[in-house]
Length: 499
Image 1 (cartoon, rainbow, N blue to C red):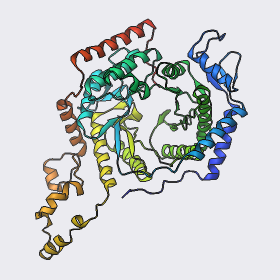
Image 2: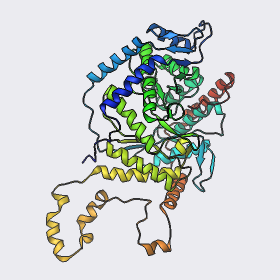
Image 3: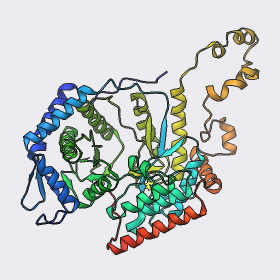
Image 4: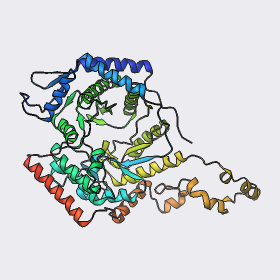
């Protein structure tokens, strides 16, 4: 059983062509704004290096070195490479039945597990979460969830990475926001992975990429992160974009997709200039909530623009069209809103073929982290895991002889050994959902949220620290963090550059 429905269609082939044709024109008409280049071009900053590479492939650089134009012939070469890549791509693989899910987020705030109070995230929150994640079978991490605020702001991401290493069975991803601190990330990752620097260079645990500022802007700090990772580790330059409809793009979803596609084309031109490779699709568009003026990661408009984005990606590069994943929410505390938004997103995505989910433990579009929400999210994922397992059909599960033996006497299957042998894998036995009869619940009125809070507090108190490092290695981790703080002070850094 695959539990696979045809992916919902947001755009047909003609609509995709209209958007791509407009994007090709936009990419050649709207220049990329850049910051961080030397005014005279004499110093070899990372931005200077990038501008020189772009000039070599035919891009036009303004006299003040703040604008990069992509002439039509440059975009045409990008489109030729994209067409060749799509022609060479094979048939996309069928979605499997294995579900993977991960705690995520980069929150400056924590929803306290005891009373739902919103407060600044701390190193202890990160340490506790790290131990809790290790205690939950099958749970992964795709981002740190918490960026601690009780440490110097300029080194918060280094503290997050080090705290994960010191409190987990393995390192997990943290994004580099400060290019000057990339060497410390490399040292920490190498130490945590048994001294294997080559493995770190090939596939670092941390993320060191540039973030594009929509519309059409790259800052010197972002360029420096990606270019320094390229220099120190041999990684190709990677750029990601997260355009917001209604703020950084037109509010119309088609307009958002046209602008996003144009940015993707420019990103791929940059990739051809630096590494002679295509980045592929780099955009994950969202929408603004005009009532509050902030972006949102949930709701039908977000799901539609993300599905449209993935449809354009498949139209250009090939591959399967998958709906958006999530599960995200705008709720600030665990409860009805968080579970409605997360469950609806997950249902939509699972049925469309998505098999990997991040965003567990996140609230407020990932600006708040919550261990209580993590408990609810894991329960939801296990529900979908059971759905994907489907129905096992063989002589043992059909149980023909058992039916003929027991059925004439009545509903006594609960007494049979067959039931005891199979109920765990056949049925779904949630930890948090309450399925008691009404009068039993009245005598002890506990909700699913109550059960999630109890489980969170229990794991927070009892989860073991599975860090495999020796005392000497732990001391080395702490010394690398102190070195990062010295580098930050020496460079006059005041705060982390959170993208």
